[in-house]
Length: 315
Ligand code: HEC
Ligand SMILES: [Cu+2]
Image (cartoon, rainbow, N blue to C red; front, side):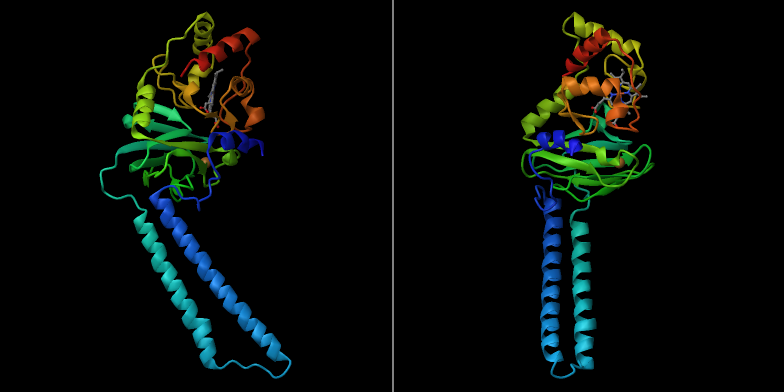
């Protein structure tokens, strides 16, 4: 249960696909209810026939004629299956990416075991948190850097695989502001179950303000401790894997940390973004998320304190 804690705090509600908050998810939920209704009706009819048969069985042998077998055993199932097939194809087409100009395009790359998220054709990089303007169509370009992952925000859309060397497109639209949970829907390795993200749908002005904030380079460290922390960051292994725009090269082995402090969670939705969790994560990621692609660090207490002060200043 521990893995769900911070996400539950970060997201507003149960992420059930039946609590649709966007047009594509609404189509999928409608199809699901129809399938449930049909299955329930078939079940009820079967139970009634069974009850009738068992009551009569004591008196005489029930011999259904050929007509009964042809109608109930072949014709009715065939009609139901064809209707479901047509409706499923219809739903698939209705939720497909169209050629309409989307309001914006976001690139998301699946990584073992986190999500790299890019806006402005890659100029703005963040991780594990996608922001969208409410009521607008956002095209999400999905790909993978390692193995097959699957991008799934149950309240907004169905799953779509992320395949190395390919770009799959998904149109996301949220009709209501909120924070929705995203999940990796394809087993991708040891920490697949801890590969989450959040989708923050907000009114246009708020979204624009957020994006503007993310466009900025990293804040200058405020105060001596944070400045010292920057030196620790730049002088140790961190810089080999993490980018901080304005301070490092575009290293992309790990999540971009330019605006780390603005994010709700760390380690792909596993931990709430606070000082204690950050310290524990940096010292020993493996004890928290075994198999994550980040090694433990050997920092002295004062160095760690400075590093934390710096990371917390990256709003
Ligand atoms: C070998 C590459 C590597 C090194 C070195 C490394 N990291 Fe990481 N780091 C990663 C990867 C990969 C992740 C994502 C792990 C995951 O969520 O599965 C990560 C995640 C993080 C996160 C969470 C970010 C988020 O938004 O979820 C922080 C903070 C972080 N690292 C800080 C550091 C610091 C500070 C150092 C130096 C002491 C460091 N890392 C060294 C690869 C590295
Ligand atoms: Cu995955």
